[in-house]
Length: 110
Image 1 (cartoon, one colour):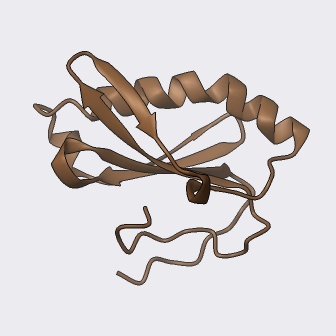
Image 2 (cartoon, rainbow, N blue to C red):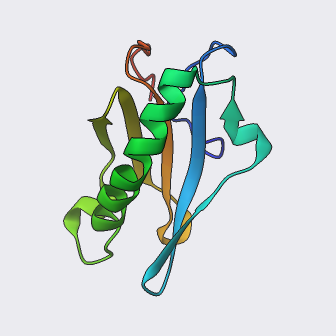
């Protein structure tokens, strides 16, 4: 979400993964860079992420369907101790951010 003004955990020690979910036909891929992964998740958070990530991607893929009205709306949902925020991005991509649910983010200033 570096290309837009989406709120983000601003403390560099808060673990956070950002990326873009891109659709290629029936396949989805997550595009990230080193800058999109910040701080280290604890062992417990890493296990939560490992368990929740397929569910998060499945939910994101459902919402990314171009025919769905949900595809053009931002979403926040929770899985297994993690929060995922998503919003429509350029060229049909879905921008997402995943961080531990215990992290409180300030209100968006958009």
